[in-house]
Image (cartoon, rainbow, N blue to C red; front, side):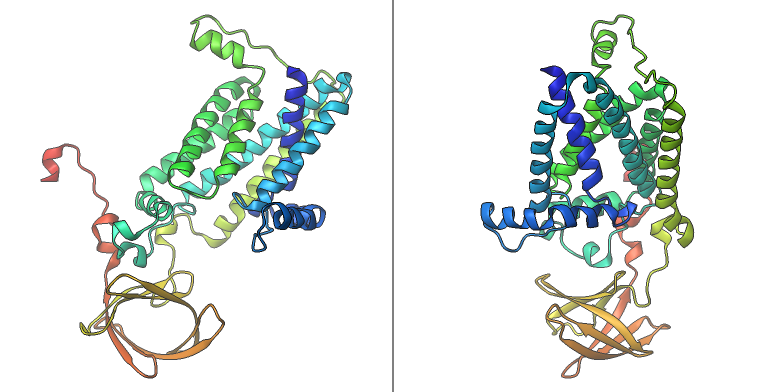
Length: 383
């Protein structure tokens, strides 16, 4: 019974790793999954979940991912029932080893992203000038984490350490225990702050538990019973496949690291907090106090955001058509030409929307309290 259950889990994880798209590894997984499962998941979504507006990109917490996971689980159950007992040990061995490689690569990806501040971004000006109570919990979490580079780098180093430990047999158990702690914390954060990678982080947690399947008894013996643990060496005995397996692991980890690090190395951006922002990026306060528009923000992803006095925001994607003209595009694809004049000396920005003109003053949003690098040794220093 235990062998069949573990075999089902191992097969499911293998299928999930192959079909669940990881963006940083390219589009192969997504295109393959869309080709094989796209129409089927769309049909199930429309007929069972009664929705015609679901995403079919298999991203975490989407209905398509839930349906795909159920399909893969059913396939795994059927496969576990029909595969002969003599093949269980070999399948479990390789499914565990591949799962460990997958966990290591995912931990490396998010570890490097944290170190280079590519995951927890510095909050955008429109977030900094919004009232705390008006923000969603997920935005609050990401924004708060983005204000501390020390925390981001420290968390990234811990994830990289866990990835390194699980790649080597002698330190694998310790690495998996650290990974389980990290993944429990991530899952609870995703649940508590309603961040949309709940299902993916939960599956990663179960992967780490599965990878530790042969070591729970020795760990219990050491941590609870305070006795000497007895770990067994379960490496594959068939030496003729061992060099090939070592080559595959080395190549997979090396190529994954290249894919992860190349964009960072190519951009030369090793701290996103200090990365170049587009022209006009920042916060501008309307100098006309009688106007309903209070602030105008320029987002790093080429969005202009208008905030009124009740903090209601309207955003447009913009492109620069000429030196002193922007083209704004709303979500209905309607385009509007806006002339502007920016006086760098006085930090004044004037925008001509046709029927009305808005004169603004640029604010130094990087001097706000949330972004100050404060550190107090004692509470007396805070006074």
